[in-house]
Image (cartoon, rainbow, N blue to C red; front, side, top):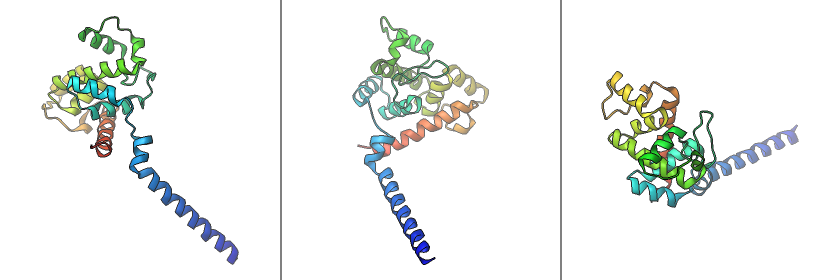
Length: 190
């Protein structure tokens, strides 16, 4: 009986040590940056974010939420690439940018996806007067829907009530991107 109790105590002690070590490792800045909130394509993101006057941390947060950094990601609805742009939207953006010879397959190229996605975020930023909630809602749910909601629900340009966004997917998306942005700001504040 005493031997069994001693074994149980030793097992509990071992589990506690492993749990503490695991938590310490998981919560370390190194682990968070390497595995949970990495910053791939940093140079490309900064180049196009600065060129388009968009926060690079917002761009990486959108990318993490959209594709988890899989350059060939494709959604069931047809969105493609790191920035998960719909083919019609990407074609429109390419046309607005005078991007010659654009094809939807190019969205699998990280540089093309980031370039077009960042330009599109910049156009939403301008349209929604720097309001990140409305920008992100437009990126996910469509700028036309956001304009309609603003009229229908009389949202001001300063709207921030994420829980009032009518589309559940868009509401959750905006919350995830902003949560990711907060984590990125904490980890990459330099």
